[in-house]
Structures are given as C-alpha cells and as structure tokens.
Image (cartoon, rainbow, N blue to C red; front, side):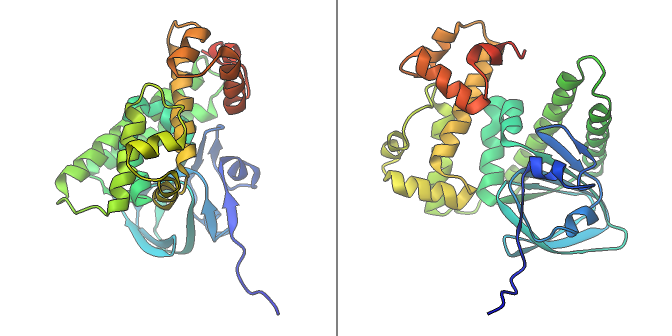
Length: 296
C-alpha cells in the first residue's frame, strides 16, 4: 500500500547551515533567516532549536504542533525547540526576520534569569508578544547589528561583541515577557504545569544541580517517572536534560568567570572527584576543564 504521508524534515542549527541558501547568516549557536520562502520549501519542519520570529510587515498564518497561529505586524513569536511547523499562508507584503538560537547560548546569555525564559517559552511552547512601535524598531536594530557582526567576524573582539548584542536583545525580550505576564489576568495552571514550573524553580535554586532525577522528584513528592513525563509533555525534554543543561551552565560560568581552581569548582558543584568532573566536562563540551577555561 502506498504511503502518501508527507516527509517531516528535522532541522537543528547545523542542518540549517548545511542546506543551500536556507539561512542568510550562521555562526554556530546563531542563525538568521530573512526570507520566509526558504522555509516553505522544506515544510513541514520539525524545528529542534529555539527561534524568534519578528514580523515587520503583513501577516503569516501557519500551524505549530497542529495548532493554527497567526502573526501580524508588530508581533514577535518566541518558540521553544521541538515543534512542528506546517501549512504556511502569508500575505503578499509579508516580511519577517527569524533568529534561531541554541539552548546553550540562551542559558549562557541569560544566566540566573534563564528561568523566566524557560517558564514562559517552554511552558507554552510558543509565546506571542505584542510590540509597541518603539520596541519593534529596537528589535529590528538588534537584528541588523547581529547580522553586521556576523558578516564582519574578522574584526577584533567580534565574537564577544556579537554575544553581548544577543544578550542585550534577550534581556529586553525578558522585560517584554514579564510585562505581558503582569498585564494578563492570571489563569489557573494545570496541576502538571505547576509541578513542571516548581521543578525548574527548584533546579535553578540549587547550588549543586548535578543530582539524580529521583532526588528532585522526592522533593516534589512525585515519582521520577511522573516528573520525566511532565517535563517531556511541557518542554519536549526529559528531566535529565534539564538537569544536564543547568549543570552545564554552572560549569561554564565557574570555569570561565571565577578564579576558583578546577578542584574547587568540582567540589562546589557536587562532583565526587576531579577525575569524574573532567570526564563530565569533556562529554558536555568536547574539551577538558583546563581547555574550556582558556577560551576566555
């Protein structure tokens, strides 16, 4: 029997760069797409990266995880990874810019404020923000600056400056997220979402994050299996992935931004010994703790 099902294209940041003319700018953890028609050519897409769509003109309608969504001028869409995009329909005058970001970059740029992003974006999978005119213009400026820096990587300190621009843009977006949350009337969250929120807050609050899923589940008075199920349902990622992500950023911060010795960092973050810590860092970053520290 012939299968007429349309093939689903899985795309992460590296895939975007490997596909001809799909992205306009690419820099490892960052990709920018200026032409939405590039994406329609490979639909439906299973997007495995965070992305931000800034609509600057016209409107677009498409499905995210089979739910219809419309984005119009002066609106910005924030999306978590692991969503399916399909059925694009846009006005003739539609213009937008899409910024794709890795989880690693978002965590590194937002630091201890990453929980605001996680709770807002991962909880809802997508979040549409209505932009006042001046905020839309500001985001356009950010995009142009990011593109300029990505085109001129040979300049001194270009990588650091590019990351600083992205960090400023993300912090401004956090302010808009918080303003939106404050202006909306509170709605009762489901029991499952409340537990997921509590898990992320608990994870963010711990100095030692590298703990078994069982440990977090016990503090939340649920089973490890149920915690993993809730995390997967509301974020597309199991609890173990969240623990590893937050641990990874603690390691990055302590190695690159403190004067603590590697042994002190290993102990501070709860690793049993420096050998185990070194193996863990190599598995996450592909380099030793000493090599990671030298990247500063």
